[in-house]
Length: 106
Image 1 (cartoon, rainbow, N blue to C red):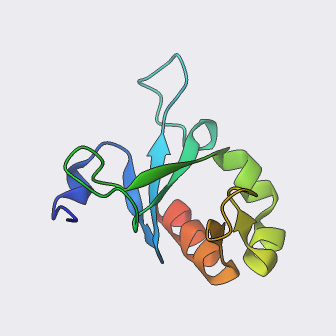
Image 2 (image 1 turned 60 degrees about the vertical axis):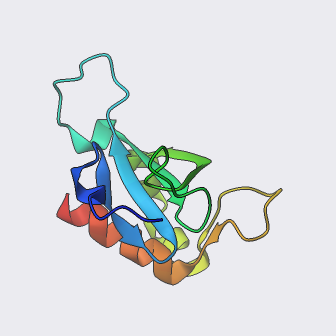
């Protein structure tokens, strides 16, 4: 069951294919809205979606925005493997392009 109010969830950035993307401020200065100091968290929207986990199953994929931006060309060409243990947890190049569009718009 996917809630209709994902946009109301703190950090929700958007959806890229099967992945729900959230932007998190993990810095001690929670008032800072400096996107470059935040992390992107990636959730599998095909697993464990519930009222308790409205974004889906957290993949463990948490990346600094600056790290993703530094590797943008490579990630848009090759994608991102979120877990070597889970074959289906690979963000495709097309999905990575969507992730960067979400970041650009944030």
